[in-house]
Image 1 (tube, helix red, strand yellow):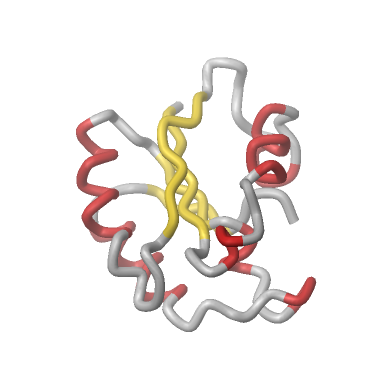
Image 2 (cartoon, one colour):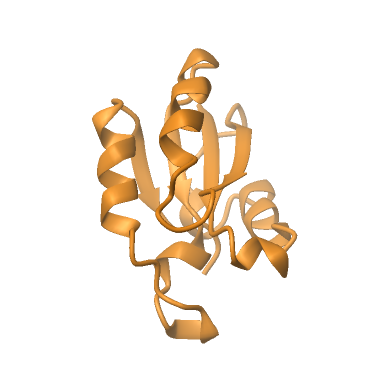
Length: 109
């Protein structure tokens, strides 16, 4: 299973992604159902509002066989935990799915 994670551009200025990688490495939270053969093949930001970078990078990731893209918890939590809600979440999700890639909402929260 080849996995990628997309996260919020704004949050990336203060978050190095440790929570996402730790959850994956420990196979917990939103990564708990993946086997030992699963690997993260991509970790990228949305490119800022309106998620302008996502579709271009999904196309690139498909060339590497990506099976699923997780929307980072920073994008999906809304106002919980002090994050701003992503105003483009539904559009980003629909765009990824339109490329034939499964979407999971969340990583480690």
